[in-house]
Image 1 (cartoon, one colour):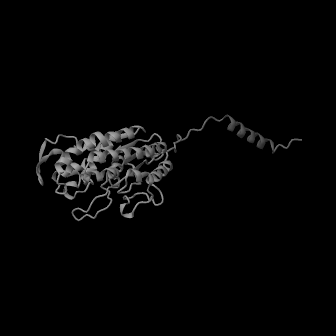
Image 2: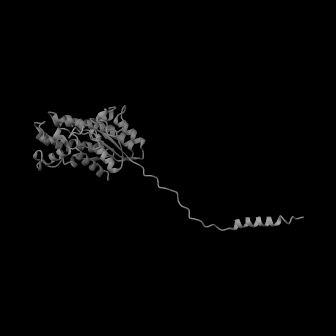
Image 3: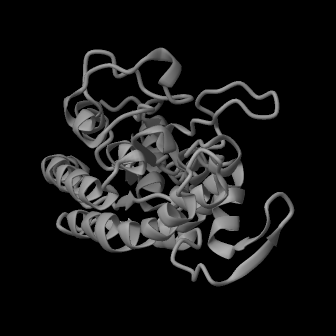
Length: 302
């Protein structure tokens, strides 16, 4: 016997199920994508070297001596939008780049890495490996402190030749390690302005004009040729700062300098871009560091 009260309920339920199965798609708002672009990866600049890399400046016009953000490494990092990791130490020689641990507090770079207990090379390699995939640039400036004693040598040519041989040997052991840690990241090696041109106007050098003349081939044909070859061996670019700051221009071209009167144009440039003429100090002025930064940026296509 069929319960007539149940049949309408069963039929109704069946119609609901069938309607659900045969219903077409329901129109609604188009789905929106929630995918967002990942933030850009911040890349780093690892800087090694001496006081040029730390941005050291002497006491001048009331400004205390020490590292500063005027240094070319800071300028390059700012202008190329890189995070600076600076392991450089003022006063470092090419041998100390590889062998000396620690760095005196007064010589530490602004915003630099504490290299206490490690060499510059070790600290740089560690930084490069920790930032694998983020390295935008590596800069190296070294050798000036190896060469500096030759300015007062009785045989500057022999002294410079010996010093450059040592620089080459030290770079030959340092640069391959940097290249291995840096991978395909660009490495830029630098030289220096020919500060000895400033001896032309300095009372500290009784034979200043002779030293200035001698310094041109020493920088061009001895130091810079050797540096370019060593950096080239690891696929690094070489920035000839000597050329960029006018060091190869003829000494027969004369400029009227406001302090020293008529002097060779290359001498006037080194007086403006370094502290050598005023203080017998080899370090760049802020304008000098900007010239170096501009040359580095040009070499890297930035």
